[in-house]
Length: 321
Image (cartoon, rainbow, N blue to C red):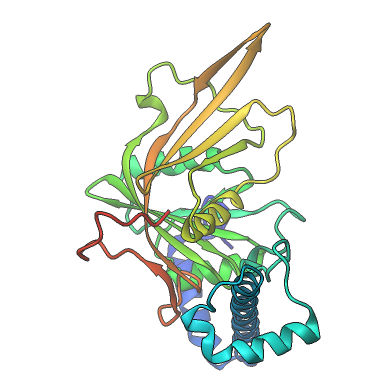
């Protein structure tokens, strides 16, 4: 058994031997085969539902464009001319979707968010440096309801299975290069999505002059300038790492987008008569999104929802978030 801190209840040699024996027995165990079939069925049902939702949203968008063109007396858009008659007949039967009609929730993997507080498992890459371990401890305080796990020799697949079995809603993995934190991966359980971020300008709490004490209250979120479709997706992924705060909470987490660089800041505030004083808590860092895929972190064959293309001719002009 492994605690949240990653310590074993038994001697390392005995624990390793038992783990190896268990891994050899699992592939032939009937319960293990049943579990794999169940996970595959749930994943298949989820992807079928997502495809149906995407098709329904696309149809509703085409109907809305066609209705707008007809009402304003404009030419039917070129991409709709081949199916205009069929869409008009369908709208007459079902009623045209109005401007306020709600489209299917494509973020259906977060449909139950808000019903229960998120539970996060936080870990690192293999053989973390002392600086990455310190950053891990600080990030555990940033996210409420977080369990920290020492990576040790555990594989990504083993960690994901642990998350699914123990009811964790998200897996967050911190990465580094030569002792400098340079990556953050957020994988939503049990079916995804997984967002990959690059980390830059990481400043930890003990490097911030005058950093105040860390509050354990649930923070309010300030999300600014995430206006595109990809930006809204990133906002959905990140905001569901935090539970719903109380109205009188004095803790604030800010995610501010400037030129596709997402700045993370952590503050508490205090009211004194008519004045409001803001105190930085830390840590502070910048995030740059470079990939979103539709599965969990252990699945390599899943579809990419969005990938950064930095070497295209128009890369310097495009803004994803």
